[in-house]
Amino acid sequence: MTIVRIAPRIDWDSLSFALTPTRTMFTASCDFDGEWSVGESVPYGDISVSPASGVLNYGQGVFEGTKAYRSARDRVVLFRPEANAERLRQSAVRLCIPPLPEGMFLHSLETVVRENSDFVPPADKGSLYLRPLLWGTGPMLGVRPAPSYTYLVFCSPVGPYFKTEERAIHLKVERRFHRAAPRGIGNAKAIGNYSGTLLPLVEAKREGFDEVLYLNAADEHLVEEVGAANLFIVKGGEVATPRLGGSILCGVTRDSVLHIARDLTGLSVTETNVSLEAVLAADEVFCTGTAAAVTPVARISIDGQTCQIGDGSIGRVTQLISRMLKGIQREERDDPYGWVHPVIGA
Ligand SMILES: *Cc1c(COP(=O)(O)O)cnc(C)c1O
Image (cartoon, rainbow, N blue to C red; front, side, top):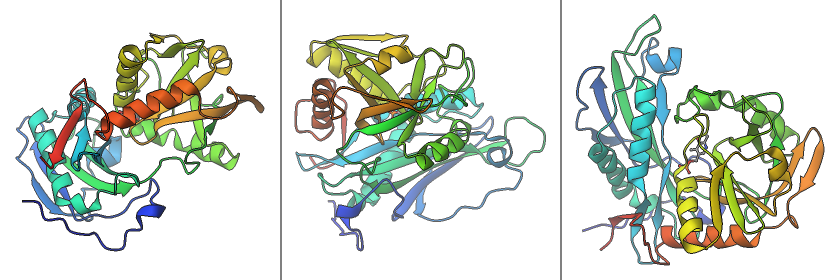
């Protein structure tokens, strides 16, 4: 039986994408050649780390991001956690971290959701963001894989990622910096990928933009993605997104939107090279991610010149896809794909 505890001191109406400490987190450990421990739940709080750990010295760490939702059927559900398990496995392999068994990953998410169920916001206020981390713990000095590893999942209730809420966002095309290189680690959710995006992001925000749009490092006529979200364009009833070339992160939301657009909207859908000109000439532009959901783009600026997309508000196709995705995630409509993974409730 689930005991519903009311989490004190959370104002559900003012939730943003910021950290709220919760009750427990899940952690497990492993030696380089060993097996993962079964793991355990511990109180949420600080951890201690060796100064010579692989993660602190050489960035040997990867992460995930997924959400638990209160659904229209009065359950708490996860969305496609198996896809996050598979991506975490691929990211880990790329960074020489022993991958985690899928069953253990799912068990860890379910445990954290159950133990912090009173931190899952009401359906119309937000969701419980889950952050799995995997990193090299053991001490070493030279550059090599760490001798031991830690897995940890913490969670936080969150509201919208962009403060603009319903409004569409303003992107800055980044001309000075690239996010990821061909054959690098852009397609892994590696912690090091995000440190390099901080300076461009801080500059862009200071200039009044909401996010940064990165170009392909090998061909700067092509767009890649936004800091932590994938990009889609709609033109004349066709939906397109940059194809995964090794430097783009394969978003679970991106993949879900591709399925929905192909199967449920009847529009033509392609994964292809998307040029900057095509983006600027699009009828609609939107970005996708677990944190960002489906966020419409109103304006894009490049070298100080601003281009408005459509009439600057959310487009018809963007709205349709956004509603369908949200409808499946919240169990307001059929889930023909079996994406919803119930954790609490019948
Ligand atoms: C996490 C992430 C995304 C979005 O992935 P989702 O699985 O949809 O949350 C897109 N781009 C980057 C760079 C990311 O880190």
